[in-house]
Length: 240
Image (cartoon, rainbow, N blue to C red):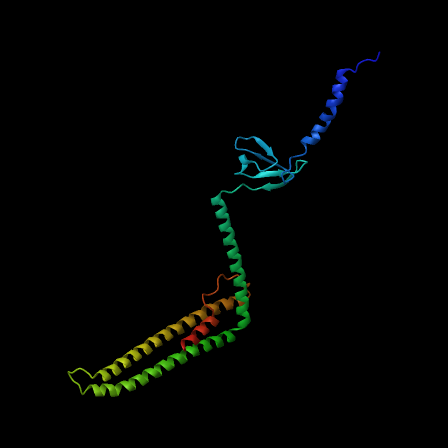
């Protein structure tokens, strides 16, 4: 008669392989996409792990671990909407600062290419000023013409003492007054333009002297508000 199989060895044969396989199963983290384990210590001092970012540690850094327990990377805190907006604003400011720096470098290099020495810069200044001087001279010439045109009109007006001037004569005198006032205003504007051009060239020359002396391009801060070339263009526009 054959003996019945002992239940304990049979149970061991079933359970032992499962127990041997368990550590390997435990070492395999769930992989929702990262293939790693998130780990952090929460505010109560508990060590938490998960196969995905841990909500209790959203406000602090979390470690993303490899299968062997080594740190793969550190996940920064999850930002609030306000924090994200501030970070984006900071990134924009940094990008703008980098762009401004690159622009300053480009402007300085272009400036030195246009004006390799002080003589070239002085020549450009005189060219810009000559344009405005010519405009002032034209306005002053026109003022003399208007004065000459006004004399016979005043002589004629003397025939009407204490009386209203004829409409035609009054209109001519009024037109002469208006034209003269316009020319005087134009002379004042052109004189102010000369001062502005000189100020721009002065600031630009100071910058150039430092660049010629060896200062790196882009190291001197923002360029003057208007370059000498722009000043010359504005001066030419005053003649139109």
